[in-house]
Image (tube, rainbow, N blue to C red; front, top):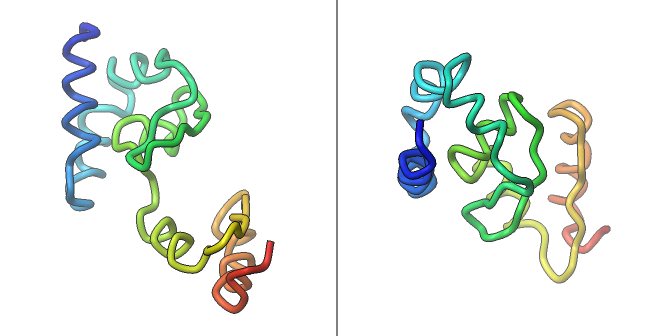
Amino acid sequence: MTDLSLSLLLGLTRRYPLVCGRDFFYRNFVKGKPLQARLAQLPNPAPTRRGFGIFCNAADLTSDWIKVWGEHETVTEKFLLHHLRGGGAAPAGIDAFTAAPDLFAIARKPTAS
């Protein structure tokens, strides 16, 4: 895959408005394919749809997903953006089980840091 075709592909996927079809695309065109190796070579931080960068690992599901789509969990992102206002801090949980209590605390007291 050339640099131009990778740029075009990422330009299209980062503007894809739907959530459905992303898993199919990832399983059939990224995971274990040459595209995954090309994604691993992209510079850090990876740009997101919101305009900030996220440092990503090479050949990691979450990192690949962020590099391809420019976002990962839209439901969690919407939740955080809705509940964090006025300089609040977001939790950095390792997984859903450790982050869930933090998310509940944010929902109860959005100004907590």
